[in-house]
Length: 88
Image 1 (cartoon, one colour):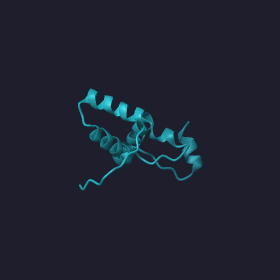
Image 2 (tube, helix red, strand yellow; image 1 turned 180 degrees about the horizontal axis):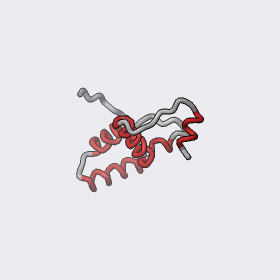
Image 3 (cartoon, one colour; image 1 turned 60 degrees about the vertical axis):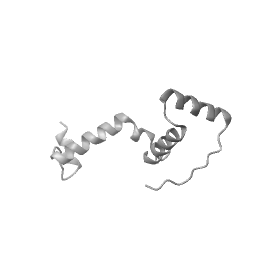
Image 4 (cartoon, one colour; image 1 turned 90 degrees about the vertical axis):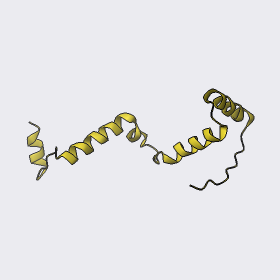
């Protein structure tokens, strides 16, 4: 992977925080910044009002539903009446 130059204009408070993080973790500041950029780029794009979908709990339920579908654990209905009748 080719690394391109990144230029950041940090406030002194931000640089001091990075310096403390670097000292505490014994990682170079550049690595902390690259890890933060990587995490930011890998997160899914969230539309306003859809944040609930990306919570840990909701994503766990999505994985469970996908597993149920893959394993054939579902029912299909011909119409609404048949579906409603199955709930009784």
